[in-house]
Length: 67
Image (tube, rainbow, N blue to C red; front, side, top):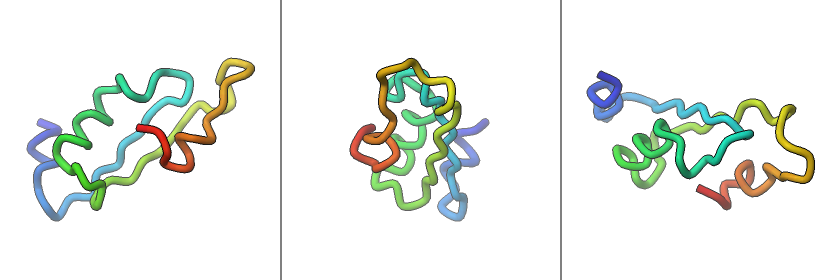
């Protein structure tokens, strides 16, 4: 059902991912990259930065240098 809505070229894809999990394995991000490979219609939201493990860094993800 989500794929049907995401495939419409008029739809803006809001991709919400959790910072305390591996972003490369999150299903929503994989779907968005498959349907919108250039990322023109996709807006990423990173949540739960406050509960990340000590010593980890979300800077690369925030700066769009990581998947």
